[in-house]
Length: 117
Length: 115
Image (cartoon, rainbow over all chains, first blue to last red; front, side):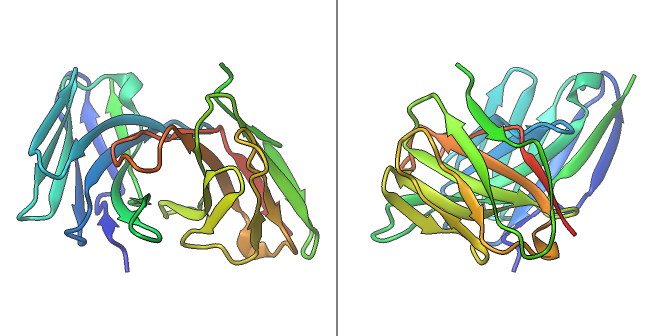
């Protein structure tokens, strides 16, 4: 049962335009949502996060929006640059473990973003 | 700081062989974890550790062992390699396991092929 879903395997946009990457989740107990970016032959790197009690978080060109009622979040990149071409993973954190003491991160399958010059 | 380092970068094994994937971090992070990434899949958690001497299973632990004798090192052992363990393995660390927005730092990965 996939709890974090990224239904678009790929997305292609023109340089300077907006990139919108979408993510859906099924577990309403997720506390935090994080986006990671991954270049080929490298490990993922953290991009931006949002708490489940917020609906927006912004960091430079990157904004994440959370719609709890729809169990949906999206990552907006404005303006998109060729260097943004990478796989983007949506991930969600939930408290687990004995006594609910550890956070466990669940990843989506990723979306390959290609920004064309 | 070197961050999170992993060795080897590439490895080819025969079915039934054993090996250890090494992971080290120099950030004094208490939380360390191992993930595997397969084509068309997200990263799946194999094992994790919240501190030296403490380990626990993740989503796909079968066929793997871990130990955490120091804060810095978190090796992953394949006991008897199987073709289904062909994957890219990532080690990650983070400062805390009790903060949900705490970012994890990933190593560059080990690409393992089991023939």
